[in-house]
Image 1 (spheres, rainbow, N blue to C red):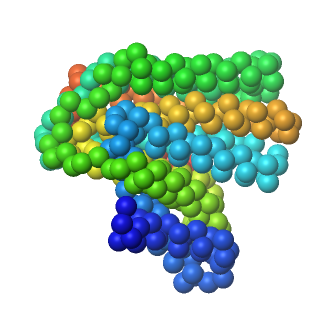
Image 2: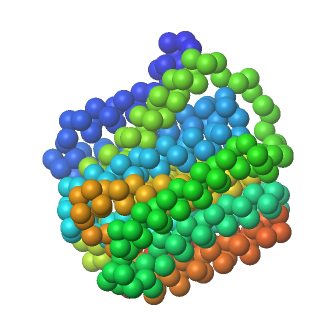
Length: 356
């Protein structure tokens, strides 16, 4: 890798963003907050660039898995740090964040990929079996962790007892690890893109791949921690517009998921919908399958209450989203209508957050 390559914007701006965060100047003035927002977006774009370099080196589906797990680990770190700092007042934080992430991934990322691909190619094709495997895993984890707590009787409504929390955390890990094994080993061919309209460039060198992996982690860390640092500014903006506080969580979740979303949409524009599907559904499974066990451990260690059960409105919207995605992916090919419907579902979710 030459000096010119190291001076690429994807290396420079994440370092500038990291320096900005370490200086802690987000609350000094609106102008500095705007600068933080610009650096946040450049870090997102840098994460997408470095993820593509790593994915090109390791191949599919490992490239999408690296991005999904990296973002999920950082998301977990953010939730856990806020839980420990906020104490008992954050008993709904994990549920709200995970639910927002799942809704944004299923309706926003997947819907945008279907819309972009449908506009450019009319129809795109993918392995229907891969979608079925991912959805089976996702539905099982979602129902057990976000809906079942409303109907258990050992504890108060919408919460698990300690034994139940341990059992369903282990169950989530078992489902996710099995899905990962199927995706990468036993049935890897189901998750490989069959068509690619872009010419294949030479794969990056080992040094280039290593540098991109390091800067991918840096970019993702900067995205999460800058989003956390800028959250007071976001809260003030939401308050000034008279919107509910719950909208802040949706905005932060959207920022954290931007790297995955942009990578998935770029894959759809290259007529690689299988890669988009791997990113979207794999990220949704990782988001809930890894986050719930981690916050369960924190809840047990610090003896914090953990409210997981969704309310009726949220369960209806979640069921609508899952059912729409199932119908959209049951034929192995896509069209523009599926994308439009999912994006309308996303609009309904965000609208009901603002106007509950």
